[in-house]
Length: 502
Image (cartoon, rainbow, N blue to C red; front, side, top):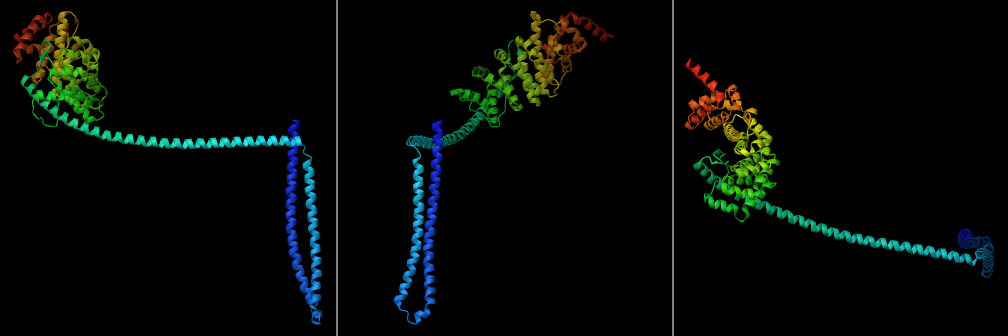
């Protein structure tokens, strides 16, 4: 601490000496300037006095003062002026020398040891300065590196922009390819649709699984005309080289038109039993159910449901549809549909599933019966046709289960409130509706558990009428046999006969 205080004291002393030195230097310079100004002043004054003297002695000069005397006088005056100036110069010189001596004495007060300490401090300051300069250089180097990094980033950005441009160009190419595929899909779909429709017209409804009626293929019309190159060639074109897989991939396309066209092709291909297996194996059924679940567009719902309905024409696919939640999806689609044609197709798909006796419980649990009841409110005859077919299929399977002992109690059709609609449409003017309802009444009437509801609900009276007036002989015979075989109807039959005799 003592050394540090002494250093500070000496530093203050040195600072004071330097300040005094600067002060005396400035004073010396000021006096030098005044000296010069005095010289100039004396010179001017001398000239002025000479002029005055010349003027004062003009008379004497005029009376004969010689030029020699005039020069002598001027010389004497100049000597006096120079003497005065020399005295001032010596005075200033003495003051400066005294100052220098004083400064030297004061500097001598600083011991040599202190000078060494001051030198060390100076060295530390020098090192600190050098370190600061090194840090500054380091920062400059970092700045240069940052500039180089920025240049590299700009280069990367340029590359990314080029990649984006390439991707945009590739996207445009893909759009063109999608448009081309859409055109091919429309053409091939039209060919398959037209030829399948002709086959359906020739063959009528298809009977499978023990005589139960399944939906006829739901054909989807395309705006273009078919080329007519033959069914075999059309299917081959579509399925060769992974063509079916490409169509299925379009079901996930963000392009709505491409998606709809692909569903139409799948729906038309599914009309043929030999194509159904290929579609299911390629994941088409899963894709259709996913589309039915995720899409908000009713047109897409309608076409997807038509494809599912066509795939549901055999029991294997029916089991797969039910296992993947298809009954619930179709029920929700029916609840949200507004277009009668959408309801018609969904009812047709449900009707095909209703013909599978292994799905009776699952159909009720997942809302299939409730959806069917909701669709009865629609007045469109096409919807009634599919609803009646669904009821007939369900009644057949339920009757079979009752005979086998796996079903007891009243029919689910009665429990779920469909009997009034069945009675109301037993004499429907549409023959397909009327005949399916007549068949359903015959199967319901086979079991005593349903007799009381059928009598009170007017279904037995309709069945008696069917046994007499049905245009189809096989249904008349089935109705009479059913009435005779059920003991619960015998009292009502005798009472009716007595009323007719009276």
